[in-house]
Amino acid sequence: TGYLEGDEPFAGLMTQGMVCHQTFRDADGKWLFPTEVERDGDSWKMRDTGAAVTAGRIEKMSKSKRNVVDPDVIIETYGADTARLFMLSDSPPER
Image (cartoon, rainbow, N blue to C red):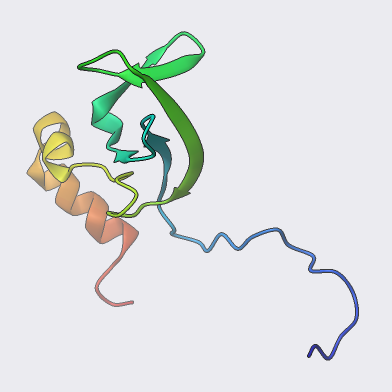
């Protein structure tokens, strides 16, 4: 099927501008938001129950994997104008 012989030189593609975040799962395999977990020494646990959590790979942000950052937290911390400026600097409208 291929026209060239040889192994794939890259393990994965990381496009410029791709936003990534660590993933977390509970004992049942359910995805967890980063705000639901906290570090406990070398491991992770649920904030409310203390149950063990599996920390997964750092992956592209995805609502289905729940590894997203709530913009309200950013706005509360840095302000709405700073959040707007960051979005425009990262993705200017003229692109």
